[in-house]
Image 1 (spheres, chains in turn brown, red):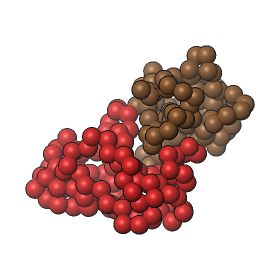
Image 2: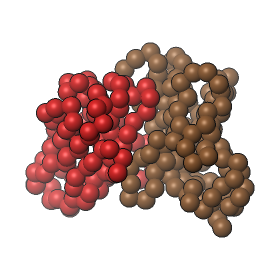
Image 3: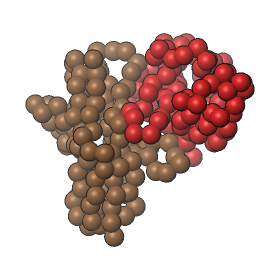
Length: 114
Length: 114
Protein backbone atom coordinates (compact mmCIF):
# COMPACT_ATOMS: atom_id res chain seq x y z
CA UNK A 1 0.00 0.00 0.00
CA UNK A 2 1.09 3.54 -0.69
CA UNK A 3 1.90 5.88 2.18
CA UNK A 4 3.55 9.22 2.76
CA UNK A 5 5.09 10.50 5.99
CA UNK A 6 5.93 14.07 6.83
CA UNK A 7 7.62 13.64 10.21
CA UNK A 8 7.52 17.30 11.23
CA UNK A 9 4.26 19.09 12.00
CA UNK A 10 6.09 22.41 11.91
CA UNK A 11 9.41 23.79 10.72
CA UNK A 12 10.75 27.15 11.90
CA UNK A 13 13.51 28.95 10.04
CA UNK A 14 14.91 32.47 9.95
CA UNK A 15 14.61 34.50 6.77
CA UNK A 16 17.67 34.07 4.58
CA UNK A 17 18.54 30.67 6.03
CA UNK A 18 18.19 27.43 4.08
CA UNK A 19 15.08 25.37 4.70
CA UNK A 20 14.28 21.66 4.45
CA UNK A 21 10.86 20.05 4.73
CA UNK A 22 11.10 16.28 5.02
CA UNK A 23 9.09 13.57 3.26
CA UNK A 24 9.43 9.81 3.12
CA UNK A 25 7.24 7.47 1.15
CA UNK A 26 6.33 3.85 0.60
CA UNK A 27 5.06 2.42 -2.68
CA UNK A 28 5.17 -1.01 -4.24
CA UNK A 29 6.81 0.19 -7.45
CA UNK A 30 8.59 3.29 -8.69
CA UNK A 31 6.88 6.48 -7.61
CA UNK A 32 5.74 9.73 -9.02
CA UNK A 33 6.45 12.31 -6.29
CA UNK A 34 5.01 15.78 -5.80
CA UNK A 35 5.15 18.80 -3.52
CA UNK A 36 2.27 21.22 -3.10
CA UNK A 37 1.92 24.41 -1.06
CA UNK A 38 -1.24 25.75 0.57
CA UNK A 39 -1.68 29.37 1.65
CA UNK A 40 -4.47 30.34 4.08
CA UNK A 41 -7.99 29.95 2.70
CA UNK A 42 -6.70 28.63 -0.60
CA UNK A 43 -6.43 25.29 -2.34
CA UNK A 44 -3.18 23.47 -2.90
CA UNK A 45 -0.76 24.81 -5.50
CA UNK A 46 1.60 22.55 -7.42
CA UNK A 47 5.31 23.23 -6.69
CA UNK A 48 7.26 20.47 -8.38
CA UNK A 49 7.27 16.81 -9.37
CA UNK A 50 9.67 13.94 -9.85
CA UNK A 51 8.88 11.51 -12.63
CA UNK A 52 12.23 10.24 -13.87
CA UNK A 53 15.74 11.40 -14.60
CA UNK A 54 17.81 13.77 -12.49
CA UNK A 55 17.32 13.21 -8.79
CA UNK A 56 17.34 16.96 -8.10
CA UNK A 57 14.12 18.55 -9.27
CA UNK A 58 13.66 22.31 -9.53
CA UNK A 59 10.23 23.89 -9.12
CA UNK A 60 8.37 27.11 -8.56
CA UNK A 61 9.46 30.00 -6.29
CA UNK A 62 13.05 28.76 -6.00
CA UNK A 63 12.15 25.45 -4.39
CA UNK A 64 13.84 22.18 -5.24
CA UNK A 65 13.54 18.59 -4.05
CA UNK A 66 15.93 15.68 -3.99
CA UNK A 67 14.75 12.17 -4.78
CA UNK A 68 16.68 9.53 -2.83
CA UNK A 69 15.60 6.04 -3.83
CA UNK A 70 17.64 4.17 -1.23
CA UNK A 71 16.21 6.25 1.60
CA UNK A 72 12.75 6.52 -0.03
CA UNK A 73 12.81 10.23 0.62
CA UNK A 74 11.85 13.35 -1.30
CA UNK A 75 12.81 16.33 0.86
CA UNK A 76 11.86 19.85 -0.18
CA UNK A 77 14.60 22.47 0.00
CA UNK A 78 15.26 26.14 -0.62
CA UNK A 79 18.66 27.82 -0.25
CA UNK A 80 17.32 31.06 1.23
CA UNK A 81 13.91 31.26 2.91
CA UNK A 82 11.54 34.21 2.56
CA UNK A 83 8.84 35.30 5.00
CA UNK A 84 6.36 34.82 2.14
CA UNK A 85 7.28 31.11 2.04
CA UNK A 86 5.35 30.63 5.29
CA UNK A 87 2.56 28.17 4.41
CA UNK A 88 1.47 24.54 4.68
CA UNK A 89 3.45 22.11 2.52
CA UNK A 90 2.21 18.72 1.34
CA UNK A 91 4.18 15.84 -0.08
CA UNK A 92 2.32 13.39 -2.33
CA UNK A 93 3.09 10.07 -4.01
CA UNK A 94 1.53 8.08 -6.80
CA UNK A 95 2.41 4.51 -7.70
CA UNK A 96 3.36 4.02 -11.36
CA UNK A 97 1.76 0.60 -11.47
CA UNK A 98 -1.65 2.10 -11.99
CA UNK A 99 -4.78 3.17 -10.25
CA UNK A 100 -6.07 6.63 -9.70
CA UNK A 101 -4.88 7.38 -6.20
CA UNK A 102 -2.42 10.07 -5.28
CA UNK A 103 -1.70 9.84 -1.56
CA UNK A 104 -0.94 13.02 0.39
CA UNK A 105 0.94 13.47 3.62
CA UNK A 106 -0.54 15.28 6.60
CA UNK A 107 1.33 18.47 5.79
CA UNK A 108 4.15 20.46 7.41
CA UNK A 109 3.63 24.05 8.45
CA UNK A 110 6.60 26.26 7.63
CA UNK A 111 7.16 29.46 9.60
CA UNK A 112 9.80 31.84 8.30
CA UNK A 113 10.70 34.54 10.80
CA UNK A 114 11.96 37.94 9.68
CA UNK B 1 -7.53 31.78 -10.08
CA UNK B 2 -5.95 28.43 -10.84
CA UNK B 3 -8.36 27.35 -13.56
CA UNK B 4 -10.48 25.28 -11.17
CA UNK B 5 -13.39 27.20 -9.63
CA UNK B 6 -15.35 26.00 -6.61
CA UNK B 7 -18.61 27.43 -5.30
CA UNK B 8 -19.65 28.33 -2.72
CA UNK B 9 -16.50 29.29 -0.82
CA UNK B 10 -18.26 28.85 2.51
CA UNK B 11 -21.32 26.82 3.46
CA UNK B 12 -23.11 26.36 6.77
CA UNK B 13 -25.80 23.70 6.80
CA UNK B 14 -27.95 21.88 9.29
CA UNK B 15 -27.89 18.12 9.59
CA UNK B 16 -31.24 17.79 7.83
CA UNK B 17 -30.41 20.07 4.90
CA UNK B 18 -29.58 19.15 1.33
CA UNK B 19 -26.94 21.20 -0.46
CA UNK B 20 -24.54 20.84 -3.36
CA UNK B 21 -20.93 21.84 -3.96
CA UNK B 22 -19.92 22.81 -7.48
CA UNK B 23 -16.59 22.53 -9.26
CA UNK B 24 -15.76 23.78 -12.74
CA UNK B 25 -12.61 23.51 -14.84
CA UNK B 26 -11.94 24.80 -18.34
CA UNK B 27 -8.40 23.46 -18.63
CA UNK B 28 -9.34 20.60 -20.92
CA UNK B 29 -8.40 18.12 -18.23
CA UNK B 30 -9.66 14.54 -18.39
CA UNK B 31 -10.03 13.71 -14.71
CA UNK B 32 -11.63 15.40 -11.70
CA UNK B 33 -11.39 14.61 -8.01
CA UNK B 34 -13.01 15.38 -4.67
CA UNK B 35 -10.76 15.51 -1.60
CA UNK B 36 -11.66 16.19 2.04
CA UNK B 37 -9.19 18.20 4.12
CA UNK B 38 -9.53 18.07 7.91
CA UNK B 39 -7.15 19.76 10.33
CA UNK B 40 -3.85 17.93 10.88
CA UNK B 41 -4.92 14.94 8.78
CA UNK B 42 -3.78 13.87 5.32
CA UNK B 43 -6.02 14.82 2.47
CA UNK B 44 -8.64 12.12 2.01
CA UNK B 45 -9.49 11.09 -1.53
CA UNK B 46 -13.25 10.78 -1.88
CA UNK B 47 -14.10 10.32 -5.54
CA UNK B 48 -12.35 10.21 -8.91
CA UNK B 49 -13.95 10.77 -12.29
CA UNK B 50 -12.05 9.95 -15.45
CA UNK B 51 -13.65 11.00 -18.74
CA UNK B 52 -16.92 11.53 -16.87
CA UNK B 53 -16.96 8.01 -15.46
CA UNK B 54 -16.57 7.38 -11.74
CA UNK B 55 -13.46 5.22 -11.32
CA UNK B 56 -12.82 5.50 -7.60
CA UNK B 57 -15.13 5.63 -4.62
CA UNK B 58 -12.95 5.58 -1.55
CA UNK B 59 -15.44 4.10 0.94
CA UNK B 60 -17.30 7.37 1.26
CA UNK B 61 -20.64 7.35 3.15
CA UNK B 62 -23.72 7.52 0.98
CA UNK B 63 -24.66 10.92 2.43
CA UNK B 64 -22.08 12.22 -0.09
CA UNK B 65 -23.18 11.76 -3.69
CA UNK B 66 -21.01 12.90 -6.61
CA UNK B 67 -22.17 13.84 -10.08
CA UNK B 68 -20.14 14.55 -13.20
CA UNK B 69 -22.47 15.69 -16.01
CA UNK B 70 -19.62 16.56 -18.39
CA UNK B 71 -15.85 16.80 -18.41
CA UNK B 72 -15.85 20.39 -17.13
CA UNK B 73 -18.21 20.10 -14.16
CA UNK B 74 -18.26 18.11 -10.96
CA UNK B 75 -20.78 18.27 -8.14
CA UNK B 76 -20.89 16.89 -4.63
CA UNK B 77 -24.44 16.52 -3.32
CA UNK B 78 -24.78 16.55 0.45
CA UNK B 79 -27.65 15.32 2.61
CA UNK B 80 -28.15 14.46 6.27
CA UNK B 81 -24.55 15.26 7.12
CA UNK B 82 -22.94 14.92 10.53
CA UNK B 83 -20.89 17.53 12.45
CA UNK B 84 -17.73 15.47 11.81
CA UNK B 85 -18.23 16.12 8.09
CA UNK B 86 -17.24 19.74 8.67
CA UNK B 87 -14.06 20.27 6.65
CA UNK B 88 -12.55 21.94 3.61
CA UNK B 89 -13.70 20.13 0.46
CA UNK B 90 -11.24 20.45 -2.39
CA UNK B 91 -11.86 19.78 -6.04
CA UNK B 92 -8.94 19.02 -8.35
CA UNK B 93 -8.41 18.18 -11.98
CA UNK B 94 -5.59 16.54 -13.90
CA UNK B 95 -4.57 16.45 -17.51
CA UNK B 96 -4.35 12.68 -17.56
CA UNK B 97 -6.51 10.14 -15.85
CA UNK B 98 -4.43 9.44 -12.77
CA UNK B 99 -2.59 12.66 -12.20
CA UNK B 100 0.87 11.59 -13.32
CA UNK B 101 1.78 15.23 -13.94
CA UNK B 102 0.12 16.68 -10.88
CA UNK B 103 -3.20 18.23 -10.01
CA UNK B 104 -4.72 21.67 -10.29
CA UNK B 105 -6.78 22.41 -7.18
CA UNK B 106 -9.62 24.80 -6.58
CA UNK B 107 -9.69 27.05 -3.52
CA UNK B 108 -12.12 24.76 -1.75
CA UNK B 109 -15.47 25.00 0.00
CA UNK B 110 -15.32 25.42 3.76
CA UNK B 111 -18.26 23.36 5.04
CA UNK B 112 -19.64 23.67 8.55
CA UNK B 113 -22.36 21.26 9.67
CA UNK B 114 -24.36 22.48 12.66
